[in-house]
Length: 166
Image (tube, helix red, strand yellow):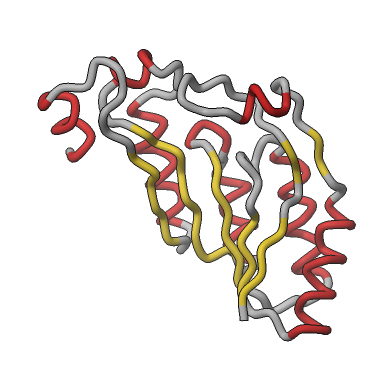
C-alpha cells in the first residue's frame, strides 16, 4: 500500500522553467519533524501503508529537519519504505546515511540537463560535479536513484542532448 505526504510547501529555487516560485513567491514553509512522523505512523498503523513518497518540491531544503524525521522514524521503529525528490546540491553524506537507515529506498533528483550551458539558460544553479557526487553518495548508502531530465530547453542542440545522455 502506498501513500504520499507533503511535508513542506514552496521552493527556494528560481529555475526558469518552474511555476513554483510564482505560486509561492519563493517562500518555503515546513511541517515539524514530529508532525510528519506522526502522519507516517498513522498511515502505517491505521491503513497498513508500506511505502510513502514525500511530494515536496525539494524535501531536503532543511537538512536538519530531514535528519530529525529520520531519527524519529528509527526511534519509533516504523518499518516503512519511503522516498523523495530533491536537488543534488541539497544532500550530504550524513543525511543520506541516516535516511537509508530510516527506510529511505529511493531519491529522485532534479538534474534537468547534463549541459552546463543549458543549466545556465534555465537558471538551474547546479554543477555537473554536484550531480556526480549526489548520485555516488546516494548509491553508497544503498538508496536507489533517479533523475528528472528535460530536452528542448532554450539553446538546446544535439550536442547538449548528448551531454545529458552521457
